[in-house]
Length: 285
Image 1 (cartoon, rainbow, N blue to C red):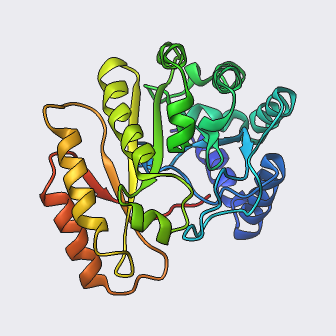
Image 2: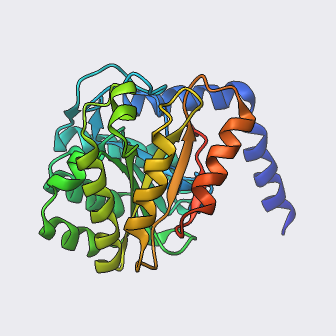
């Protein structure tokens, strides 16, 4: 490296003082018009190195157990606001965009947005941010989904998502297959719906080459005793004869402090099923 290049590099590094980084962080939040309270666990595939784009706000449920809920009702942002956000992100990241190949469509249930809006956001982001010029290969798209928003999407939506220039990960918050546990969590979704979404997860993973659906479940010493046995049973039943993509993430319930009990529950789930199983610790941006 030439001396001038070294000097330029060191000058750029020196600019990243704590004060400068705090200002950059504040600017990013102003562009997004929110903080990124949580990112999908599938972002581990790119070391959580993603560009966030908010296409929805709030959540369908605002469940009592959730530590990242906003308390806002679920709303979708207009296409114009999304495009304006993409243009602002292009300026914000500048030439550094070439170091990114992954997009997080937020926030807590982006899959609940209209199918055409999701596809438009993905396509516009790829084009405007010039993801194809990234130094990194295999562009990735990440988003959260609820059981109901997942089940409501028709088959042609999966086919359209599969044709995107991204490899797409959708992470579903299922939490439990046990009715008593869902009531305890004040999750207004039935166990039947959760199980139906879990079964569809495997069907989608098998059918589409460029889509991967994953699921989140909870553990915690305060949860009903029926939670773990029911979870293990239905996971095992669903996984039988199925191979390939997809995994499950296990997240400790907020307030759970008995680490030995949590580890025992995690091991029970992990050792008694044949799908990849990981702990999910919340990552923010």
